[in-house]
Length: 117
Image (cartoon, rainbow, N blue to C red; front, side, top):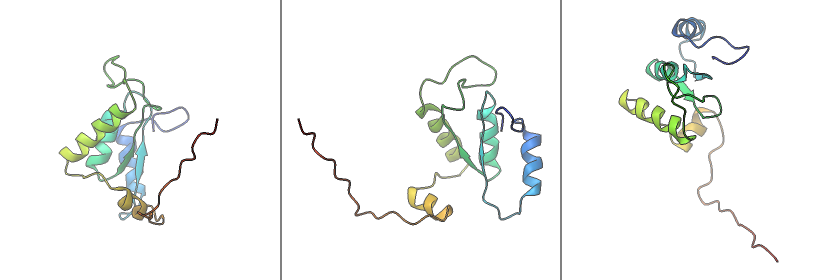
């Protein structure tokens, strides 16, 4: 929502799309542009999932020119909002299950080769 050639990021548009989804649907919204914070807050309040990152949003708030300083800033804000609304953040295992992905093996290790001069 809110990016070029996409539906504008507004609450009425979000609600219209939700009316078309099955009640048991798992859904996610990603918003580009200045309206990302209020829109994704609404998504969390309505039971959806969010994808957030600095690559879609330069400004922190829709009403000011305060720029996002790094990629962690919008993620931390969404975590705070989700927790305030009683929506805990999914673990990696919960996310994999939600998406129907195979579970990660906890015993897996990565071998980093030593640099050879």
